[in-house]
Amino acid sequence: MDVFKVAEKHGYTIVWTVRIDTGPLATSLILAGAIMEHGAAAVVVPSFEHADAVRHAITEHAALVTPMQIYPRGYRWPVVQL
Image (cartoon, rainbow, N blue to C red; front, side):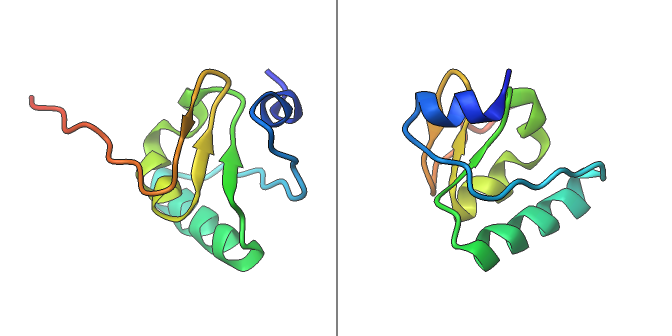
């Protein structure tokens, strides 16, 4: 799905894009820095799978916007018991 359509669907406008092809730790650091540097209100992804590994890092600083749902800044992710 197109991130611009996802953003529009949820009332956001994309003004900066970041394309990352790194592991979860580097991705978390890069995204956190970009969010803070640009004062981003949200990170928009084409599917939840694109942010699954770094969802905690994103929602610590901004909302996570997926095609199906918005996870607000500060969202408390359920704890999975194994």
